Image 1 (cartoon, rainbow, N blue to C red):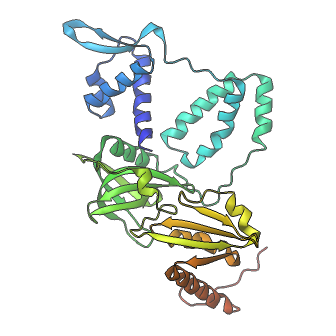
Image 2: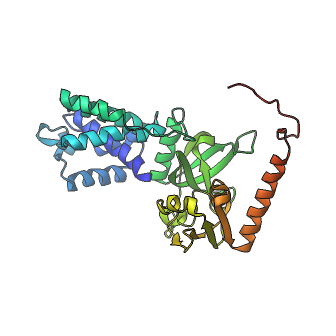
Image 3: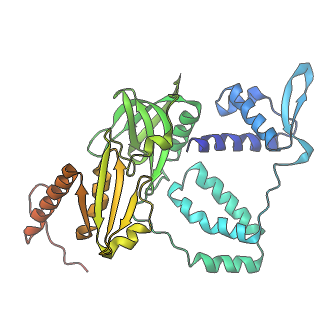
Length: 344
């Protein structure tokens, strides 16, 4: 996700160079985008290496500036019809990021794709669009979080400390944290920030939905040399990060065995079919909280075999559930009777 902050900045550089035909200096670009001149020079060098028609020219008093040469507005990117259709039909998978710069830029690109297609292709496109549906159960809406996401990306890219106003799931008021943001993780329709919390002196995960404000400071931080976002998340069954090393072994009934086999649930998974067509799955995790929630969704079709402590945890959870359902009348969280609804 850190690459997205770089993508936004580099896109703005190209857009600026495209409209300022007489050129723009490195210092001007750095001031306008709020980054260092070193960062701008690195971006310009990247453009040159990949073939953008950039030219450095000398002006009055030795003033050097950059411009797009040859009157071009950028690289000539063309798609075959099937490629354009695939990109356009995939647009709905970006919908959870609606309101952010990624969504806005994608919509402009999709409009260009649509405009470049002939009438026959458009009819086909509309026909195909009606046959592709994405479920939206539980996804987050980031239409009101665009500015927060942009600031997080700037802080991640430039490695700048940020002040985070965050209200956790159990808090009634937001708490201010000083953080070093490392990266963003997209998990089950929601964005999470991985950051070093100076208040807790450890790496923590913060859900973007619960962020009320982010202020990027002028202070920089050094990313640990041995930190890798992929490796950091490798032992998590989702986004919950523990500090243990747990070997989990689960038996799935034949009813759901094929469904489990069809998915990649974790990098460490080992799946083995049994003679009775049940499935034994093994995982190496840092914590069992998230896999517990996942297994509960299978009901009686999943049984924890190891470790004994996790099996006991599942037994306690099921016992609490049974206690809830022994009563013929539902109760709310405070023990009071809940009015039953007869609406259909």
